[in-house]
Length: 431
Image (cartoon, rainbow, N blue to C red):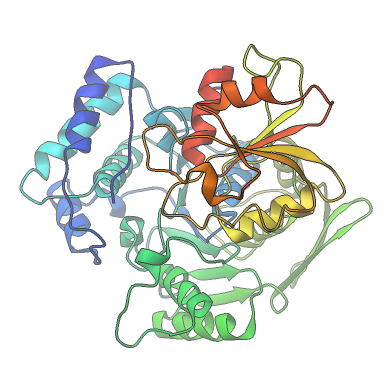
């Protein structure tokens, strides 16, 4: 797979141009290349602070953000790796709380690209190698690392038991089917069970594998994967429980009960992500976090482009405008739950390889109008794919100008790439 990145810094852009020129066979599976690349760099993945490793179809980024907020509220220095970036490539690598600087980033990418020039690595393999190199060199108390795609064959899955504090699996759904459901012998045939099998591939011997609860077929695959990998499976509904009460988030496990605030992130589904983050912290013994720090982290947490309300700007005016990077059916259901009973205008931009009904079907009862827009720099679904009454606009600014002045809010959704462009245009840059 390829990704796209631009930088205003000439030194960084020179390395991003080298990244863009990488050519990788479509759908290559396996960890051989990333292992070979890391070996040439001195195996930095073996010299990192304790790691929380998070997979999932939806919610893994939010879970990482919540973990980071709680750990930092406890005074920890935290390295964080997430993907994709929204506006700047630097967002993928956060060193001890701060986005990596341009000079350090340019030097790291050059070092990794030079080391692997004959290995034909992918964009993501180079990115992860550079990230792990940075994390191994800079002192910190803990790392939070988001899986990029899947789990079993994701480039982050070179992490060993000796550095892992806990692994986590967030909500599961169908996404990236071309890669995660590719035909293979001795794998589950049922699609969602296959997704669970792939995500559970991050499990490691003796390391807690903390999960939400899933349908029976998926649960069986996760259980089997944990047994094969000798991971310590810790599942909601068994080893831990959570619920939303009138006063906040109620969490229970063998260590006792916690009454905590709901996370500051909008959306009812964020309570699940918060509970998963809490369970990951509670079921490991390498990093300690107090109850007060958990509570403060939940109040402080921020995660851009996930049901984010945009500030007033020349792009939005005074209108209430939300932006969300959701693009699969599970994200559509989460958005539908948030906007239940509320009408809004939908500005929709979706990549051509995504399910074009993923958002419009779950949101049907709330949508006052749909305007389809391009996803800059990518192939996208045209307006005709979403229905006969769907309008078309050249960009988000044009779409917003054309909406009636009826007081209804606006949701811009369908792609993290589109969301990133909107954040850039509205001046709400992730920091």
